[in-house]
Amino acid sequence: MRPFTDGDDQYLARLHGDPELMAHMRGGVQTRAEVAAELSRYGACWAAHGVGIWALFTEGGFIGECGLRLPYGDAQGLRLRFIIDKPYWGRGFAGEAVAAALGFAFETAAIERVRAVARERNPASQRVLERVGMTVEEISRTDQGDEIRIYMITADAWTALQPG
Image (cartoon, rainbow, N blue to C red; front, side, top):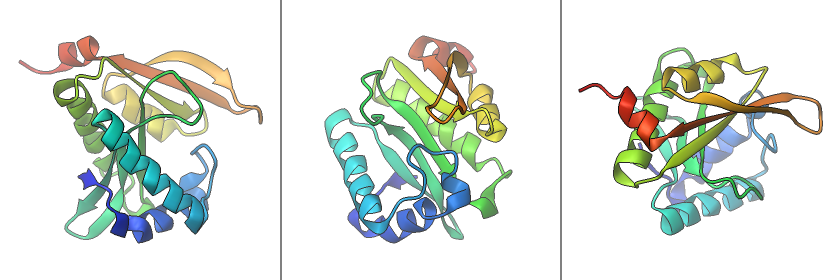
């Protein structure tokens, strides 16, 4: 895990250009210009808040992204985001990355609360969030009628879940 850099646009373009991966993400598939703007927002979040989105790699190369970001036009605090490329689904990478991001947020960056959004039609993401101790705070609907579940965890709840 490492923060994205300016040279990582090809990774992000591949990930954010995949309709299946982006079907569960707000805004859907992104153009190259949108990816460049997203990469810029990732860097700005790191600079302003000391947290952000990491690029995820294994020995085989780039596999996805995970971290915290400010949601679009929403003043409700930092949100957890993760996208794992399809060849790596079901191998535990999402859970590891999410746990690492939450650990960093609470233990290093002193964030008090983290939220995440998962669509009802994305049970795999819901399971990842629940396994790390996040709980449903609110259920709402998008303008298109999709149910979304807003998960939350506090620093105190995270600490209570840690061994030792």
